[in-house]
Amino acid sequence: MDENPDLRAFTAEPPLGIFQARCDDKGRLKLPSKFFEYLKALGDEKVFITTVDMKLARIYTQRVWERNQTLFESAGEDAEIAQDVAFVANLYGGESEIDGQGRVLVPTELRRTLEIENQPVWLDYYNGHINVFGKKIYEERMQRALVNLGEKVKALEKKGLK
Image (cartoon, rainbow, N blue to C red; front, side, top):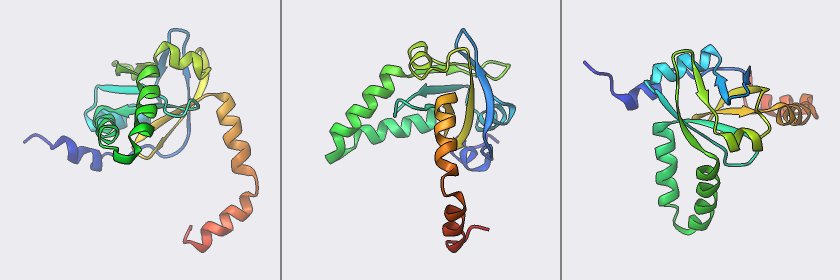
């Protein structure tokens, strides 16, 4: 009996943590094994790689990207916003097959614009996609996270952080 592809998305466990990798000079990004295993568990052989904020590259499964396209098309009063975000995503984005070694090809203009070509990168999973960010963004996020960290923890503990 074939497993329902939409059900797989709810049964595959997304990776926890931040992982380092490298985007080589040809634009190939070897996914850390946790991400490769996650995408394989979802049954996805192709991904869409793009940016929507000009800071992070995002790796989307085909199903999630299709949902985003539906959102763009039905944005109603936010149609102009959706057009702008879709324009940037399509300009810098591209489909990539995941090869047998867990590598994906990051589109040329995307990797050059985000300065991740032939550089170390960091990956995390968030809200249905995989973020890929270079050293500059990594350092910015680290600095921001550390500012008043003790106060941030206390505020979240009041809301139930264990």
